[in-house]
Structures are given as structure tokens and as C-alpha cells.
Amino acid sequence: MSTFTNARYANQHGSSILCERDGVRMSVPADPANVDFSDLVSSGAQIAPFTRPTTADDVRAEASRRMQVLLGARDAAHLDQLIANGSREALRLLHVRVERAWTEAEAARVGQLATLDAALEAIRAASNAMEAAPPSDYTSDARWP
Image 1: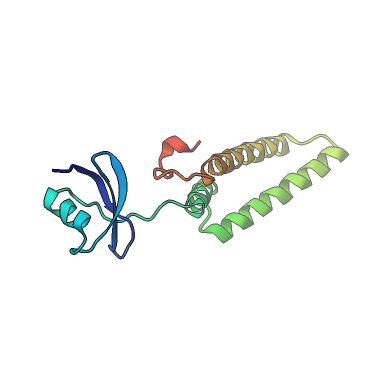
Image 2: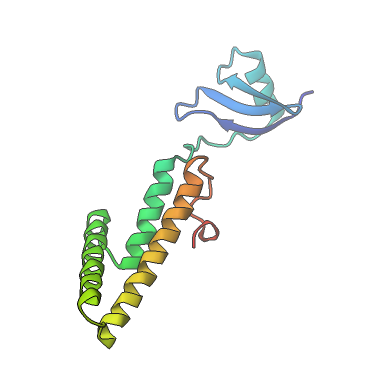
């Protein structure tokens, strides 16, 4: 008798099953008239539900969520606004520095903006590293700074 392992539905319709039969990967139509399907069912192997593969868009959405949390943004549009405002503030402070030395408060704000910028860049770098081959555990804190 064959051994079936790692069986899971290949699509949301449940019309096909991906599995290994005696160590060989295969796709089996979920059709009672199909011999492989009958063998799979009679083996008692558990068939896991279909799970949508992770996409680069999923990873980007997680990066956006993490940046929203970092900056306290309500949503992606608010995040964009906060980043734009921070960029404009940094540019204004650079113009001030050309004219005179920063005040203590201005220098502290430059430090805050630089720290936030570095954190945003680290999140983007982590996202970029995952986007080509998105892992299923892309939401794990271990994958993010």
C-alpha cells in the first residue's frame, strides 16, 4: 500500500490535491473516479485545506502596517502624509543649518527624524529582501527589524 504525505488542496475549489506518494510529489484530481484519488482517500491521509500562497503584495502590506504602527498612522494614506511632512520638516531644518547653527530643540528634532528615517528604511529593506520569494511566515517579528 502506498504512503501519502503532505496532502493539501491545491486550490480554493478543492478540485486538485498536492501530495507526496511514496516520496514522489504529485497532483491528484479530486475525482472519486481517479485511481490516485481513491488510493489517497483509502489511505486515511489527512488533506490540509488550501492556503493562498504569500505574495509580494502581502509582504508590502505588512511593511506598511509596521510603518503605520511606528509612526502612529491611522492608515496607509495617513502614513504617506506623515512621511511627506517629516521629509519637508527635515528639508526645512537643513535650510536652517545653512543659515545658522541649530538650536538645541532643532538638533534634537533632527536626531528624531534621522532615527525614524533609519527605522523606516530598515522595514523597507526587510520587505525588499522578502518580496522576490515571500515566505509563509512573513508576519513573524523574526523577519522584521
